[in-house]
Length: 364
Image 1 (cartoon, one colour):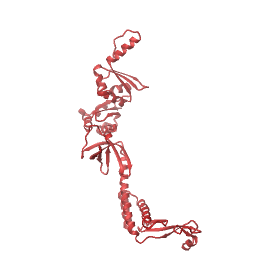
Image 2 (cartoon, one colour; image 1 turned 180 degrees about the horizontal axis):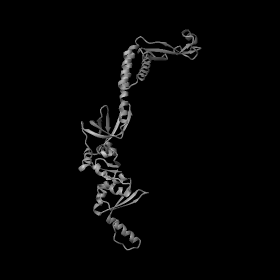
Image 3 (tube, helix red, strand yellow; image 1 turned 45 degrees about the vertical axis):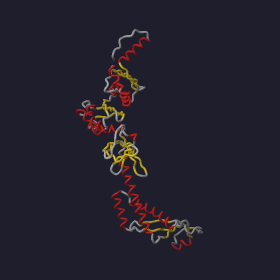
Image 4 (cartoon, one colour; image 1 turned 180 degrees about the vertical axis):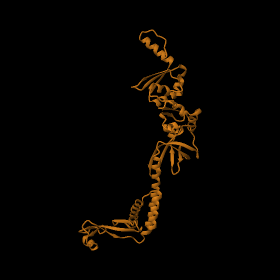
C-alpha cells in the first residue's frame, strides 16, 4: 500500500460517503487477523497504516514486568530501559516485526475489506432510502415469480410481494409495471428486505392522495378506509370548506378520478361516502348506495340500528353481508340493519307485550 492507495480511499469517501478513517481501521483489523493466520499468533501484535504515506507495519506489543514469564508478551524492566530509560512497570513496549512479504498480503486484504465495506455502505444507503418511505406507494417492474412470491425490481434493489399481500385472482407477469404499498423495510445480512402489499388499505389511501389535488392541498380530508381487496372498498371523506364537495372531488368529473384508481386495482369497486361528526349521519352514509330511513345510535356501546325500505334491505346488507361489513369497518360501529316491515313487526310485538293495541308503524 502507498499514498496512491490513500488517495483512492479519499476519492471513495467523496463518492460513496464512506469514511477513510473507518476504512483504514477496518483494514488494520483485517490485517491483524491475516497476520495471525499466516505468521502465527504468538506475539501480541498491532497493525498500523501510516495516514500520510500508506506504509503498513506490524508491531509486537510487550508489557514491562519485573520477572519475565512469557517472552512473547513480556519484557523485563532492565531490557525495556535499554530501549528507553523512561519505561516503567506495566508500560507497553512496541517493536517492529513486519514480515518481508507482508505487503502482498496487506494489498490483497485491503482490497477485500474495501469491496466488502462498499457493499455494506450501498446496502445501508438503500435501506435508509426505503425505510424513510414506509407507508408510501412505489412503482416497480415485476422481475420474477418464485413459489408464489412476486419479486419487483426497484432499481438498486428489489421488493417482495408475498401471497398474503396479493389481490385475490390478480395475475402478475414478468416486465409488468406495478404500484405497491411499502409495508415494512427490514435489515438483513444480504441487504434490505422490502415488503410490499397490494391489499393494504394504505394503498387505496395513497392512490387517492396522488389522484385528487384537493387531498394533496388539504382542502379535503380522507377520514377512514375500509377494504376487501380485489372486491370492494369504502372511503370516508370530509371538507371543512362548505363550498367544496368532498365526495365529488374524489369521484372527479364524470367519475374520472375514481375510475383511474379502479383500473389500477383491476376493477375493485370503490364507494366514496361523506364523513360526518354526527354518528347517525355517518353510519347512514356508510351504507351507500343503500338509502336509509332512520338511524338509532347507542354512543357508549358504539351500536347503531339502521332502518331501510324493504326493497333496499338486500342492497344495504350486500352480497354475503359485504356492504354492512365494510360499513362497520369504516365507522368502527356495530351496525344492525332492519327493514321497515321487520321494525313494524318488532313494534307490534312490543305493544302486545305491553297489553296495548297495535297501531300503524310510522316512519321516523
